[in-house]
Image (tube, rainbow, N blue to C red; front, top):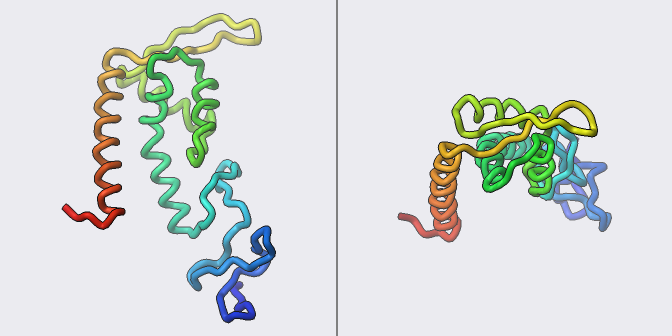
Amino acid sequence: MLEHDSTGAIAAPGHDNPDGVAAVIDESVTAIPALPVDSYLVIPYSSRVETPFFENWVTQLRKGMLELCILNSLNGRRLYGYDIVKSLRGTDGLVISEGTIYPILSRLYREGFVATDLEESTEGPPRKYYVLTKAGQYQLAQMNKYWQTIEEGIDQLRKGKLP
């Protein structure tokens, strides 16, 4: 439930920032958490304002970027699946789990973009390592080029420069 503070601003009760000032929000928002967390992994990330629309947008953006991020993490490296997860978790806002990455790795394998090999491990069962194939390297180059094009276009829009 929303309340009005002493200035008349609308605020979510119980969601004060560390300075003790109520967070001012739009009436369509029911709450702003003190520290945003991903709803399916409960891992904090740096974004500070969250609405249902924004949360959905962030989720869809992350889903759309995962293949690109996984391929980039493998660029020039041979990695065990969990090492890929750890490298991607270090990217602020990406929020990834093993349950998310392995189906994508399987799809990339079926597409011929990654190759795998098993290596015995002294710490348990054999580990599956992933490496980019030539087709994967080509696909990554295409994806990175397209990403750069989109990024430049969005930067122009953000600066108010219309084509």
